[in-house]
Length: 313
Ligand SMILES: NCc1[nH]cc(CCC(=O)O)c1CC(=O)O
Image 1 (cartoon, rainbow, N blue to C red):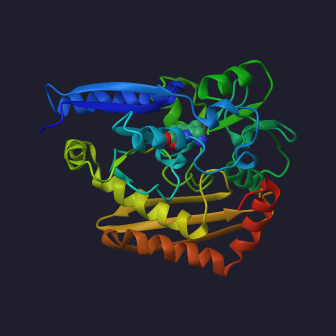
Image 2: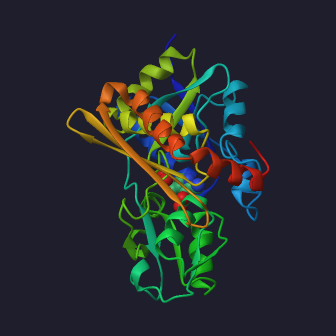
């Protein structure tokens, strides 16, 4: 029996729907005649919009409902922003495709100032990412970080309402939603190391669905997949995700991966950094190596403080 229809589980946010539509279009293009439908659902992370992610149970907040739909056979694949995907999957599910990465950088968005450096002392910057906060304050301890969550449209509306002098968002989300013109300036990788997986879309499905795996194969982008594999291996070793002050970013140099990693105090007082290179076939070992270099510098104590405040492991 051959698969004729694929049902995509997706969150209902504009960005999630964009990503699901993107996967649908690419599947239809690769497999003429295949019927692809969307199964939109609300995740816990979408319901609890006014709490800091780190305080409401952290990892997996955006993917659990989608995974349940896969396990209950209400959908066949789930499309995720890779930076929101936990390191481990429920029994019977796995990640079978990583699509080509969009711009991985963080973006500075302001209606008044041209760049981070142009912000006067005391300016109010909106972000709820401890990773962005730590790196921002390390460079500009004179800025005031103010809580900002919600989907991309909500965050831009809050900036436009005058609640912040500037906000920081992932460039990828802005570009995908057609808001590229709102990017005042892109922040260099060195100044704001991204979250593992930032800018990449991944597809999760049932491990036993061989036919689905084969249908997804044309969408897989090997370069992105190896880079993200190294980043996720580092996060996994540090037990981290996108809700903790951990950053990492891998690039290819020929057939070698160069992985940079960072763990920071949310205050910006301490930023630990490490990097290493390895053949791309050893992506996972590379991730573990950089994580261990960070642990050797004391990353565990910093992360323990953060988890302690957040009240989860
Ligand atoms: N944590 C929310 C989230 N998950 C993925 C993106 C952006 C797109 C991406 O990184 O693929 C965002 C928004 C943001 O950080 O600005």
